[in-house]
Picture 1 (tube, rainbow, N blue to C red):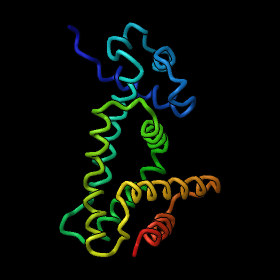
Picture 2 (picture 1 turned 45 degrees about the vertical axis):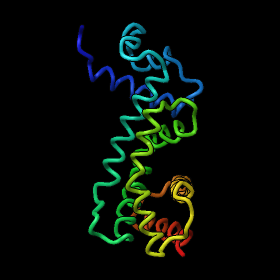
Picture 3 (picture 1 turned 120 degrees about the horizontal axis):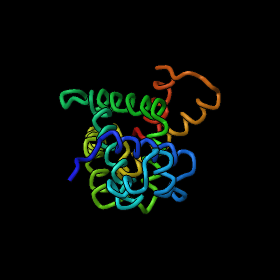
Picture 4 (picture 1 turned 90 degrees about the vertical axis):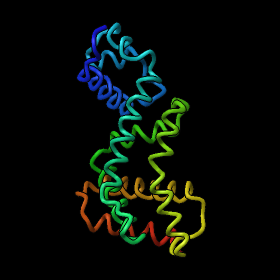
Length: 190
């Protein structure tokens, strides 16, 4: 059996990202992915049995990548606020600079396409954040609200802030990140 070509998988993933940004998950088809990736249908089916498999493969790849980036400055010896800021800063910058990838992840989260493996990976990716939020609640810094709601609020706040920032065509600055952090923290602090 011929080994899988990582470049073809990457082309399929990149085509999927572009298409989801353009037409959404529901309108995505294997044929559209193959055409956009410039690979034949035989090739695409050699690598993936369905669009759901492509979606989950890409989702898992991006989830691993972003989880690794988000927690790069996380240090268990730092304070709750220092770790929260470190995670928030990188998340904010990633959402701004890697908009298409984050749009894809959000579309997947709200879709029926995610496999059990993708859902388990999603939960694992948020494990450190959940532990950090629990620490903030234990220290009486954060409101005692379910972590899923806190995370949803924070992610929505970042997305809303960035939407408005993009409408003004402003370049992202540390002052923007600091303002968004202050707004989000003010809303969830005791």
